[in-house]
Image 1 (cartoon, rainbow, N blue to C red):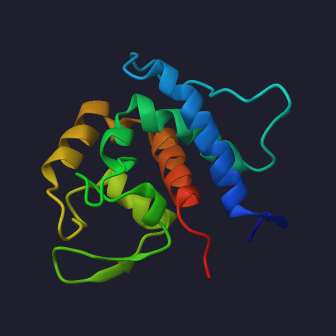
Image 2: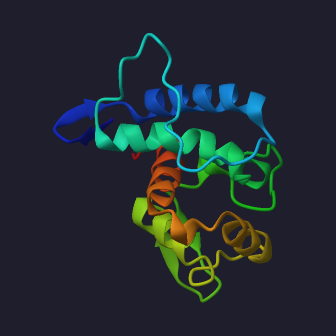
Image 3: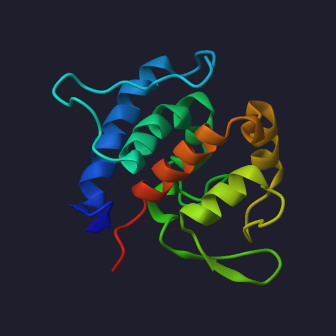
Length: 158
């Protein structure tokens, strides 16, 4: 459980709900990107409760439309990129020898400056090309939404 904005919430429940949104978005896989968008909230939910939850809701469909799912939601043991389900909340080794915690700040920086903190064991070229293709530096709200979603998909802190 996590306390955000004075509210107690279960990360796993939120992540499961967002994965449901992602599954619905897969129906539009391959569709053209249409700017910032507003996301879609099921009818039984009036609105996400916090700014953080809103970012997570906006980030879920971007995972598909920006192409992140192809490398980071793959079921293989060692895909082209680290799996989102076991990425956030863990320590990773970087090519420069440092070990860092994958948190929302690390994710945002990685999306804005992907060449600065390359993760050991992964070819950085696909990530660099993907970020350049979608022009993330020009869309800080999308960077925040992607980072929030990825961070929420990770395991609950122990």
